[in-house]
Amino acid sequence: MAMATLKALVGHTSYPSSSPLTSSSDIFTPSAPLCVWRTSRLIRPADSATVCLLRPPAPEPVLARVALARPGRRASVSATMATGVKETLPPALTSTSDPPPVFDGTTRLYISYTCPFAQRVWITRNHKGLQDQIKLVPIDLQNRPAWYKEKVYPANKVPALEHNNEVRGESLDLIKYLDANFGGPSLWPEDPAKKEFAEELFSYTDTFSKSVVSSFKGEGDDQAATAFDFIENALSKFEDGPFFLGQFSLVDIAYAPFIERFTPYLQEVKSIDITAGRPKLATWIEEMNKNEAYTQTRRDPKELVESYKKRFAAQV
Image 1: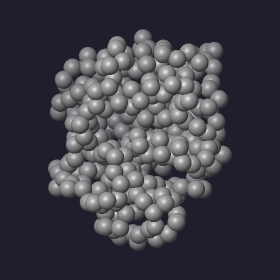
Image 2: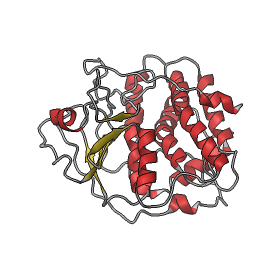
Image 3: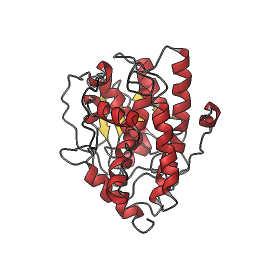
Image 4: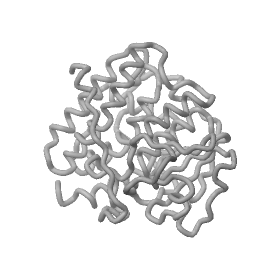
């Protein structure tokens, strides 16, 4: 596929707080995004609030397992690096929770445990070993505290990063920001060819998600198959490792939360194994399952499948 086809960016949509997408079974779909990733800073309130809505996190999340037991796979050092931090996750703050002392010099990452966009930034924080430097502040988006919009982030969305007396948003921008402004292992390539390809893959994330979700809506499995074929081809570009850029990078973090969600649903509801005929993708999933920074954030696949079933059952 020509690289030019990767550069198409999809417009981003917001839903007002009065949107009917407010039940616990509502989850992200690109046509009705429940968390917006447009670049944002603390300047003025947004006209509408967009949220990520999923069920609360399970006590011990287990990633959907694909039958990928294949001997002789080499592990990537960068992906298997342990964070060394066993974090006790705080409870999500609700409408009755007191606000933190905002802009007191503490760096805070505001997330939802269930939002795939917030998960990107959470994984990056963990992989870089920033648990002691960046305080995790989970927000219950179904019962959001009023002070979050009033005192922290007028856009009233996650993820958001409070750092140096500013609040920044947009997941892809935030993972780049963490990588550039904090310590820990670098997750962005120095090689110009890899850097260019990384930007192209960032641009494709929207198209990828929309193509897969279209099959959930009964619009044909061919679009999802094409999207996963594209991923397989992308994983074949560099041979110095099993990841998109060879070695583990922000690109893997950008795609992981969505492949995590799509895999179990397609397997259970449509009997589609996304790794069939895609050995590079199979290896990528194996390697991601070894990444402690990621496994600390992943969801219970049964929970994810049930959420998708409730939303798309009438359309498949």
